[in-house]
Image 1 (cartoon, rainbow, N blue to C red):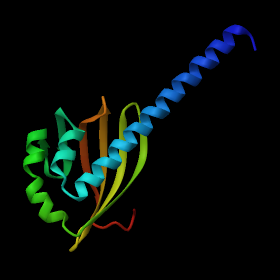
Image 2: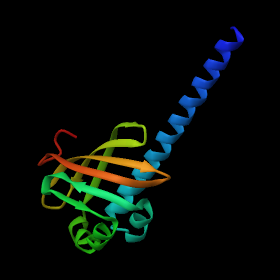
Image 3: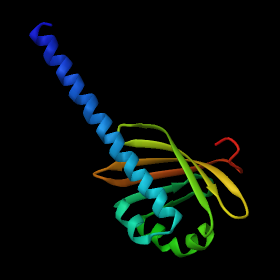
Length: 138
């Protein structure tokens, strides 16, 4: 292999390795998010969110700041008691991860598509949209 091709190959390999590692790190953050959300762990959720985060709840037309979200945790804690949350990553690239999440509450379930933007090890943006009123498509 000519020297110039070898350099291009090496650069491409290093770039792909960096992207794969970033995606894995983002996946770990997303896993931590859902674990903390399930138990309404205010401290962990706060640690995962950047101070400037904007959380868009498409279905109800609300955008929450970090403070708004953390203030809603007491209400969420009651709603999530006895529930389960299943999630799987649909795609992850360039710091944006799209997740299909099934929220199995005691009295109903709902399927959501959630997109997270991660930078510097924290969630800087999130958008949540309902997909279905049950999780049969999960």
